[in-house]
Length: 371
Image (cartoon, rainbow, N blue to C red; front, side, top):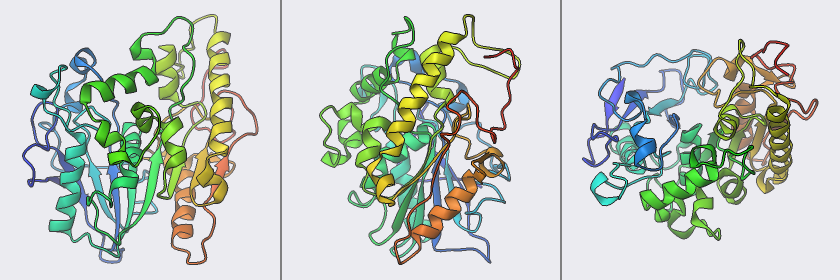
């Protein structure tokens, strides 16, 4: 059921409508002291022009239904390993990857970016109205831009008082890992450069304090605190990371082209695949040396499938990488987190083929002429 966190009148969408979340309490036979707080994805914008092109449902809560029906196989669904938790799905309508807290009259872009404020208001509402308290467990995360926002906030939730002391946290990060890579061909415009988008967003949102966690992130350039390649290695809170080596969104941003079951990359295709292969190899190498993964305190699940942010869809429970689903990997992470003997977190990384969408378990199939 849809809920408005009424404790903050500035916790609003781009168009000024209230930020909302969908609430599903733990069932009677569930785990009432465990919580899933999931930040919705849906891209972002970084200046007036990019924000003007956002679609209606991404900037307003006005048309949200009173009841949300989720894919039963996804993390929010009835077959999820966290189906017994209190489940909170915070809808995305601020276009800022949950990192903004500035009104439209305070920025030259003229955009109301309030995602961080919506998140804070929701968490406060969970404490005041839902009973979130010390001693509880929280799986905190999201998908796509939601996971990038979760990455930024994960270490600061308790130091800044957004989550009560004593709540045990585990991050759930589905597709936050952006790479600082060279441009593809001559596509150097900001819309094709995730690095430049992040720099522009931090500049126009004036959110240095938010993305740096009030100084907890001490990277040399503050925009790097909002960029997966640089922020993930320094996170202190344990997390379970899901990241395709051939992440669809990362590639379509850079290449301005995609492959579908009925259409191929533009000709000559080889340049597109070479760029994708180069990025995939770089990503796999960087993921495997994440210090938290090496130490066993955080988990990693990485396919070669051409997809992105699949945790709310059927692939979460049905697509297998080396025989393991995302849901099974999350279950193993939850078990390790609750193990008093400090069990290692799961690591599932497909390095068996090293080619675009080559994993045997990838559910998405393409025409043989595409490649």
